[in-house]
Every structure is written in C-alpha cells, then in structure tokens.
Length: 161
Image (spheres, rainbow, N blue to C red):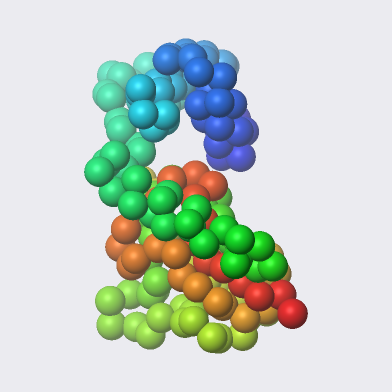
C-alpha cells in the first residue's frame, strides 16, 4: 500500500463519518480513528510480517493549530477564485526553507515554473520537497513556517496568468 492509497483512505474515512477503521493486509496493519472534530489520525502502521511490538504512533499534528489555517483561506474565497491553490499532499510540518541558515524557497510575488520546489513538509522524520505543478506567480503563502499542516490543506495561492 503506497502513501497515495493511505491518504485516499484517510480522506474517505473522514468523509464517511466512521469513528474507527482497521485494515490488515499482507504486510501492513493500519488503524484510522476520527475524532468528533473531524480530525483524522493514523494510529498505527506496522509491518505484520516483522512481528514487531505494536507501538501507537500518532501521525496527525495537534488539533490546536488546525482551526486557524482552515479559517483563514475560507474568508477571502471570492477574491481568490481566479488563483490556483497549491495544497499539501501529506500531513506533517511545513517549512519554507531547506535549512535554518538557507534562503526561502519562494516568496510572495516570485514567479515560479512547473517543478520548482515550493516548500518542504516533514512527515515522520522524512523531509518531502513539494514541487509546483503549475507555472505562475506566488500571490499568497497561507501557512506560517514550521507550522503543522493537514492533508489537502491549502499552502499557496498561485496566479497562473
């Protein structure tokens, strides 16, 4: 089971209203629990063949940081309809720089091309470069540096013209 399939499963469970789903396949065991505030967490993903002790590993960030970014893009939705929204493909921590002493990947007003790295999202100690799927100009950065992000959360607004 690859990351995309797991993300789609999380999305489906969150929309279905189920409170808990357990899935066991040949090499993976996954438990997904959704809270009353629609936050989704993967509780465990342990290779079954390895027969390791099953430790509970929270993957989703704290709920306290989630409401603020979600409320911000909803307010100016009418003004931003002509822009393309770049969304987070994974749950993790958003970083605007490759390292603390390095320059930012992108800034507001900067022109980007398809394939340019926009940010890094750290998930379970893995740093994933998020590349642009569109060309255009960065209009707005919707997330603060070193903030937790959810799957499918808006990160950037890009003007494709």
